Length: 226
Image 1 (cartoon, rainbow, N blue to C red):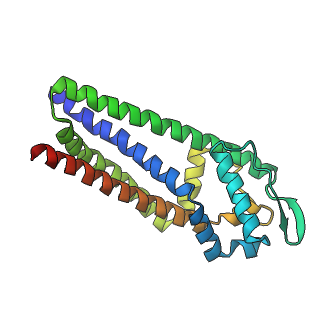
Image 2: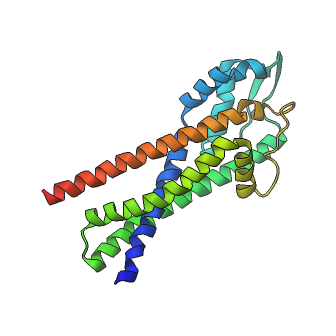
Image 3: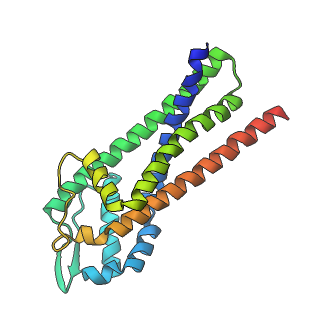
């Protein structure tokens, strides 16, 4: 039976990775985050667009990624001329971004189902209390995942541009993400500082969710022992 003891730790890692993807999902689609970053970075002024048009273009990207619209075709006045905001290269890159996001959500859902069903089966076989098992495995999985997040966080803090490039090379099989700032509106909407602060926001959100889950598990465990 001792050989089975590692199973809950793996299940907790699956669950925590699902939580991490959920944190990414939550932060990435917060419109207020974009408005705050645009105001701070003065993207509308530097691109030559109105703030309303900039948010309309942003909403097109986010809705497309979430499969709420068919394309990212949007027109706006840029530097005094009416034009289509995103060019062909940006459009092709967003196809890759959308596929990555949709696959990540599918993976998140599968990991959640596997972890929940796995816990139920494990407690049924071993007769262990679910709350005690959740707390013990949560601690083990948390240590593993936090070590990973810490390494990623330190890497991103020290050399964000290098981290961000490697992220793209890992998840994309082409170089469509290499956009010319002299031509591309998209790269000027989202400079490296924007993504640095987004990654930081995701890490903070993830930690907050972990603390909340830990309090919930520990609270239920105490109630069961009361």
